[in-house]
Length: 228
Image 1 (tube, rainbow, N blue to C red):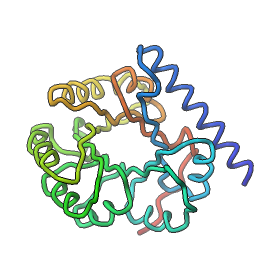
Image 2 (cartoon, rainbow, N blue to C red; image 1 turned 90 degrees about the vertical axis):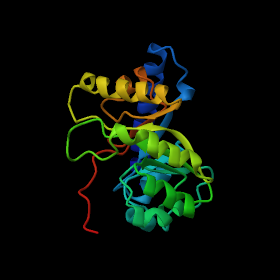
Image 3 (tube, rainbow, N blue to C red; image 1 turned 180 degrees about the horizontal axis):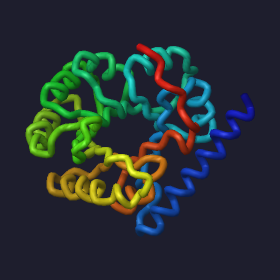
Image 4 (cartoon, one colour; image 1 turned 45 degrees about the horizontal axis):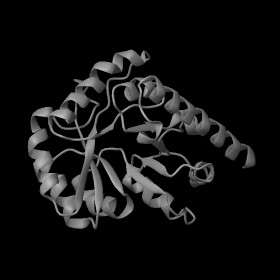
């Protein structure tokens, strides 16, 4: 157990150093960038290890998985849990009670359901900028309608936009997608950008990311997802 905690701590520090170096190269303050440690399919013990190493923001992909996992977590004062996976509207009530931030708001219907069940919830609007069928998010043409619904909601706070570029081992191939997301955010007066993962976080930071979602580089390779 001690070895596992040490490994998470070392990896976490390495990622923080990468973020700080990328921010400096881009002339940015590293403190402007939130590291979301993606703990999906990882045990509660790994979350605790990262928390003890100073990490406070954690990302999960599945409502049901985190519902089970959260029941096994000890109190973690100041920890914030982000839903970064697709959210079905029929799970909005459960998600609103589990997470402080939703990165995958992608419809007017979902905005209204979250507002109905949340007490206060930070949201990012997810855009589909890639033609890949596997990618989630709304068409950019729907952004104004969904943004309007989210801004009109009493209990939602719009913090930014989110997107995932097509997978490519070359991080530079993600740059046009990150840049397009930034341009869309600027055009709509939105400050936050949730983009960039383990292999391309430097490019994302250069293009303005305020939240990077990093899993493998902190927690190591994930086991296959268990059947629901």
